[in-house]
Length: 341
Image 1: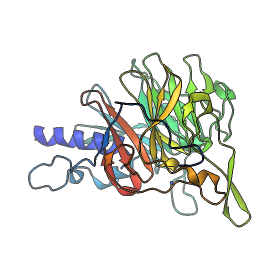
Image 2: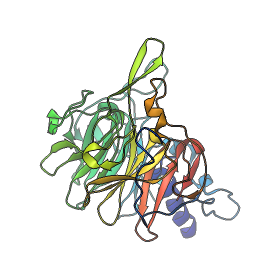
Image 3: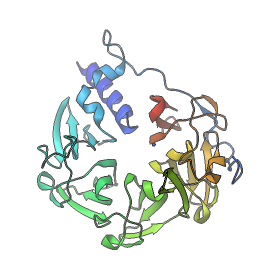
Image 4: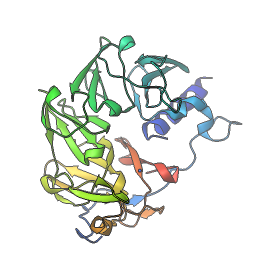
């Protein structure tokens, strides 16, 4: 039984943490010796007779978005369908924050989200996705449907760190800031919160004082998605951080140096922000930036290919997780249905 629980926890952590949509700017810059090869992770360890490691995870838990392993052995899971944060410990599931009983349903019979700070059992979320913790054990959530960053402190209180519930794009302190569907957060040792502000195509920074700043240039590209219907779209550019361009960044992971890996979903690549040099580079994935010259294409073409990082291909990579022990980055390659390392 103990062995079963260990494999369950490992399988749950990896799958949920990873979340089970070259021409215009050149081929991108790739730092030497950072990451060299991309491979597909083989099937997870199994309990004899159970088949795939995925079988250890109850079906309804596979709908969750991201996970956070905590020192007490529990796992927190964000559920963007039911708008709650689940807690799993010793094989038992309970609500960590939010209301298990929905407020109501929309026209497609999906539970409705809402927005309310307060005690964890009385707080409301709307499509929570990314989740991370600071050194003190406080938990941070990218509450994507509410366009805010929330904090769940160690006393069980939910507060809004940045944003005001209104979709938009603005830097500023606390409620002055605005986001558009943020999908991930990462917390540095000094308490700085990094945000993948997905639909603004931006990487944002929230200082310990609550000041929100945008780190890169925001794309001004527009695409006609349907005849007469135009949408703002992301783009691609490596180089100085202030000039870099992204396309729907959705996953973040800090490495041992405090630098940031970014799952640049719409560009089908993994990017790296080196805060020491102030530069953004592409570390994995074949660059197809010629689409940025088009007024018809929202995204670069995806694919599936293991091998050297510059030749590897992804199809809408999402969640990221960094392993200090193995010095490897894990990627949830969402539309290929695999985990890559």
